[in-house]
Image (cartoon, rainbow, N blue to C red; front, side, top):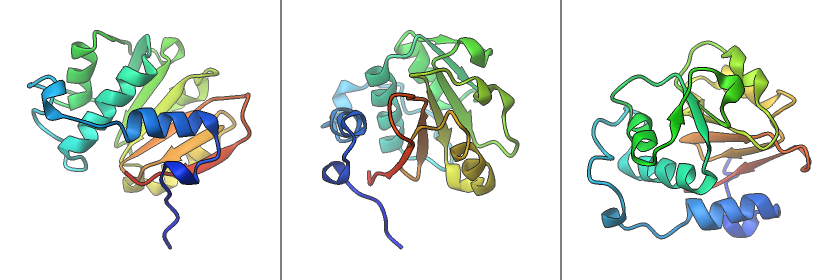
Length: 164
């Protein structure tokens, strides 16, 4: 069953802005640093790394927590954009989960207006479904390659499937 949509099927102003200003932003490879695409995880392609770069640039987090190990492109992105990496999720406003088999406890601390990104959520569907049911998961944007979860108390709980 196909249930994804594009920007015109989104009725949330927050998600519409995210989709039009970040996900569907016109990209030119010459706008990106040359060393951004080094070694790609098997689940991602170059266009997904560019999307991740644009998302971090758009969202502009102060601190990022991740369970990625080098040479994951996220680590290059945080260095290029001069974003702080932190191992403590309670002080980060962006948490990035790279293909985990176990539920991660720090995501329970997702504060209002913070975001959680799950890479390749369909590799571990049970954990993805469990995360989506959490109280902090107010806005869920599923792009298949990434799952974006926002803790936005000012918005009703809603799930969006966005076609990239």
